[in-house]
Structure formats: structure tokens, C-alpha cells
Amino acid sequence: MTLYTSTVVTPRRPARVWAKIGENTLYAIGLPVILVVLWGIWATVAPAQFFPSPVELIEAFVETWIGPAFFTDVLPSLARLGIGILVSIAVGIAAGTLIGLNRWLRDLLEPMLEFFRAVPPPVLLPIVVVLMGPTDAMKVVVIVVGSVWPILLNTIEGVRSTDSVMTETARSFAVSRSERLRFLVLPAASPRIMAGVRQSLSIALILMVISELGYSSSGLGFQIVYFQRNYLIAEMWSGILLLGLIGVLLAAIFGFVERRVLRWYHGIKEVERA
Amino acid sequence: MPESNERATLLNVQKLRKVYESSTGNVEAIGDIGFRMDAGELVCIVGPSGCGKTTLLKCIAGLLRPTSGIVELDGKRVTSPPDKMALVFQEYGRSLYPWLTVRGNVELPLKHKKLSRADRDRLIDDALTAVGLDHAAKSYPWQLSGGMQQRVAIARAVAYQPEVLIMDEPFAAVDAQTRADLEDLVRTLHRERGMSILFVTHDIDESVYLGERVIVLSKSPTWVQEDLAIDLAPERDQITTRALPRFTELRTHVYEQIQRAKRGEAVRPAP
Image (cartoon, rainbow over all chains, first blue to last red; front, top):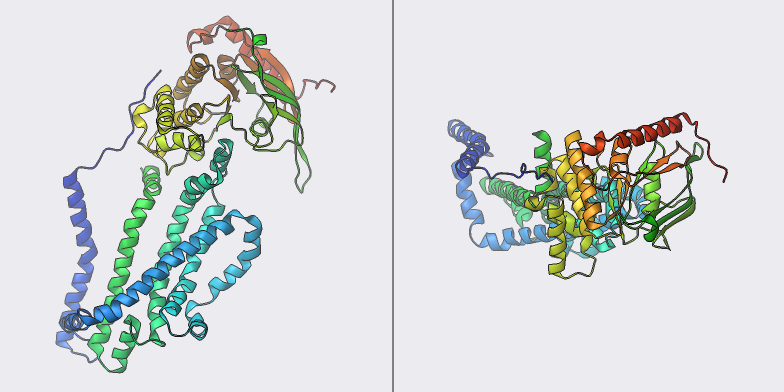
């Protein structure tokens, strides 16, 4: 019988990998560096009360956030954000799988889900506060209630659109229900699920700030409003900078996880493009 | 080759009928199909395009409920996908799971069989070696060529150790040279492992080259137009077998039958 010897991916040479990483880093930080330099020049030429120079901002950043504030404000905010995201992912995937697999449940719930998704999440804040009081749990609930939708709806869609031939294959080999869920339905839906998670992350970050704006005495959102009301402009900007950094960090973690979970998906895309 | 009357009946299809109901009216895909297949046989089914070959297979595999009629495997009625049956689909790209490696794909159907780790590994290694893919176990299906992907699907079916292997136009989407190799692979599996194979194809040459019997289907609503024994030697070879005068006779005969089927000239026997 003929044996084929083609195939199989050869690893890239390490030297080229490092060159590639260096090049990518240069592209990634090039524009920010140029902008910060321009901003520094501008702030020196024409100082403005509400726009501190980069140096002032960095000083305020170090002073404000590195120290006790990190433990009293930043960490609790991050913890609530983390819990909120994890609960959203768990609830979204579990409920989405259940709804996606049951046609009648889907037909029953879909119009309602569209309605709830369309409600802007921040307006839920007053209701949740009335129901739960200004507690940590309330803030987590606000995050979950707002950020669960993209994950839920994408999971439903991903589970629903599992390839029919793949499903028939599993059926013909008498693969059990739980195995089908684990080895077919969830992996098949994973590209959609990850797309949902990506959207949810930014919503969760927004809601973390909003949940701390009015009904709180600590946290990042509270601090930013506090600084603004007390004309601590550089400190206020440093809070916004911190939020941006948290967003970048979230995206980096997400990218790391996604590359692992969807390795096969990106592999196929690469093969198709070649 | 053992006499066919020594073999036990494996698959029994009687008066199978399938009508698809739709809002624009009912479509009778299969009129009345009946045939038997013995254990250890390699039977090919050919028919004009659109004659309901895939519908027939899905009914046999328990994936589709026939409107009426009986499908029996080992004397037991098939109502849902039976344990002892494996399928190889035409669309290998959609039947292999891209998130599993070649090995993972072959392993998946074995997970619910109560096998020890060592037994399972042995079955997988054996099946991958049989199709000539033992070197690619750690690759993903999408890193392989089309022919190799179809080999993975065949290995998965072999490792499953089915009593009957059903193949639905498995080589329709691969190139001609790969196709010849895969045909020989099917012959080898049948000869060396005694696998019972039901092979559906639209390729007349392929059916005569592979089969011990060729079942010719009529056009839709389908019935069995001819059940032809292929009296070629069991040792077959792409060059010499296809050059035999008897091979040419048989393929001409099947070809004419298909042409008659297409024109609807063949008359359905009274039930």
C-alpha cells in the first residue's frame, strides 16, 4: 500500500520568531510613543489646567495607585470584575448550551432574550441597588447582568449551528450525550463563544466602573469621580490611565487563552489562506 | 472465497419505502427496496444520480426513519444507530473533528466501549497502521491532504470493529490516483480482516472493481433493478483486473442498466 510522507508542520526557526516578535512590538508601541512625545511637547508649550503633562500624570499615577490605594480600591474592583466575568462566562455557556440544544426552549425564549439584550445595562443599576443594597454582590450582579448577553446569544447560535454531518457521525458511532457535548457541541461552538467573551470583557469593564460611581465608597470608579469633584485633575487622569491599562491587560489574557482554545480554528484559517 | 450460502445473513432490507413530506407535496424517494447482505460480503450499490442512495444508507444506519419496511441487522430491527455499524461519509472534512488530532478522532467512538487503556491504544495503532497513517497520529486532520483525511475516517471505522462498514460515496471528492489507492485499501480491509462492507457509489467501474455483488438501483422512486454477482477473482489489481474482458463485460452491463434506469425503461416488478 502506498504510504504518504508529506504533511506535518515544521516548527519555525527560533531566530526568525524573535525577529518577528521584535518587529511586532515595534509596531505596537511605536505610535503610542510618538503621541506621548507630542503630548509632552504640547503640554510644555501651552500648559492647560485640565490636561496635565505626561510627567505630572505619571507622578500622580505612582502617588495615587501604588501604595495602600492599590489594596483598598484597585484590588477589590479587579476582584469584582474577575468574579463578574467568570460568572458571566459560566452562566452564558451553560444556559446557552441548554437553549441551543432545545428547539422549543429556543423558540420560547429568543424574543425575550433579544429584548433583555437591547436594554442598556447601566439602567439596571438603580433596580439592582434597590433590590440588593450597595454591596459587593450588587456590583457583581450588575456586571453579570450586563455582560452575560453576548456570551449567551453567541453560545446559542454556536451550539445551534453545529455541522449536521459531524452530528450524524457522532450519532452513527453511538457517542454518548455527555461525550457529544464535550467533544462535539462545545468545541464546535467555541469560536462563537470566544467572540462573545471578547465583547463581554469590555462591557464588564464599563459596568465595573459604573457600578462604583454612585453607590460606593471605594473602588476605581468611585475614586475617579472623587478626584474630579475635588479638582484633582492629574489624579483623575491617572485613574483613567489605569482603567485603560486594565483593559489592555484583559485583552492580553483573553488573547493568550484564545490562542490555546482555538488553536485548531486558527490553524484551519491559516491552511485555507495558504 | 467461501460459498455464499455458508455465510449468515447480516443485513436484511425488506420493502423499504421512504416518503419525504413537505409543504409542496410528498416526495417518494424510495419506492420499495429489498436485498440481503451476508456477513463478510462486500456489496456495492450503484444508481443514477438522485436515486436516493444516501436516503437508503441513512435508513440502514438508523439515522432516518423509513416510512415503511424493515431494516434488520443480525436479525434485530434497526430503529436507532446500532452499535455494530460504522459509517464513512463522503464529506470527510465535515465528518472528522478539526479540534481533535488524528488519534483523537479515531479514539472518540471507542471511549464509551468498555476497553482497557492498553486495548484501546492497540486498536487505534492497529487501525492507523492498516490505513498507512501511523506516522501522522499527532497531526490534525486539516493538516492532511483529502485522501489522507478519508483514510483517517476509515481508520476510525476500522478501530470501532463494526460488524458492517457502510461507506457513502467515500471517494467522490478525492483525485483519481488517491482514489485507486483507497479502493485497494478497501479491498485489503475486506480480504485481510473479513470486514463486511456496504459501499455506495455512483462510479460504475468502482462498483465492479470493488464488489462481490453490485446492486443496481432504479431512478426515484427507487427499487432494486438488478442484483448482479461479480464473478471476478478475489485477488484484484488496478491494472490487470480492469483489463480483463470479463471486467469490461460486467461494467458494460452495469452501465447499460444505469442508462435504462435513467430513461425509466426498466419496469418495476409487480409487488
